[in-house]
Length: 334
Image (cartoon, rainbow, N blue to C red; front, side, top):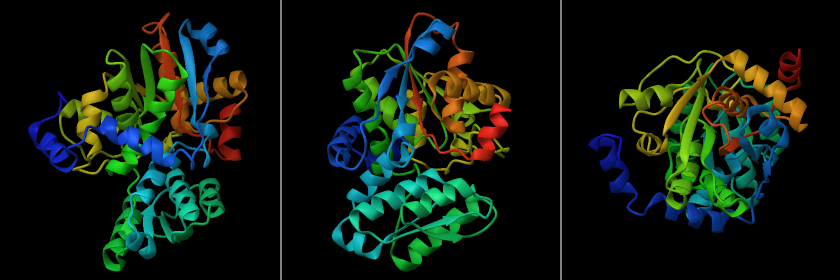
């Protein structure tokens, strides 16, 4: 790994001596009976529109409506019997919580999710649907997460991080294993960036099999902590503004294992505006007859923004989730 400083490098290599790509292959074998191998489809409409050979990886068709089921399942499968018996706890505004609840239900593990009081009702309902016990705490994700960690330390329940965990990142990386089996090669792939687990895992695997692939990370201008941190060479504490891409919004833990990986695998960063995300989502819904959430819309927006630079190339775009409220759909289409 080449770009990040020696401090972060030592943290990663000391804790995880096995190459991440090996962990991802192991994860793919473990979780295959719990998740869907989602389609990787060529989009005639977007290819004609952009002049790029566009392929969409449809994680909006994953079991919980999001890629998050991969990482949560791999994490819970890593627990021993004693840890499973104690239960798990996490914090989430939606997709991660639903994923943890789904995996816990499949494995018979008690699961509690802490959520802020402004969490999306649609995503709360999705969590409940998969059997999560919901505890509302605080007015933002930071407070909910702090409470979940406190409960974890006090009770002995395992805290399941949405990204700062090797097993979670390896689970998300199984998207790369599937993509390799679904096409001959890609020139580039576009992936939305929040905490870095999705792009860190997926890009690490793809670069291990296709070393020349260009990895483009994208985030909304309103909340791009990881991308700004990469440029600064350290994790920054930045304010996040409201964004349609709520699945990628928020801060990044100071010593997260995803930071050195993202520094290494992300070749280019793209920031998109709220208007660009909204237009991209509307266009995708119209052309592909599918719903997508804001974080996936950010990736489509990045494709549209970079179309001249990517002309005639084979480009994958990860549609990372499809959990979106009716009110948001109406606001986009109007």
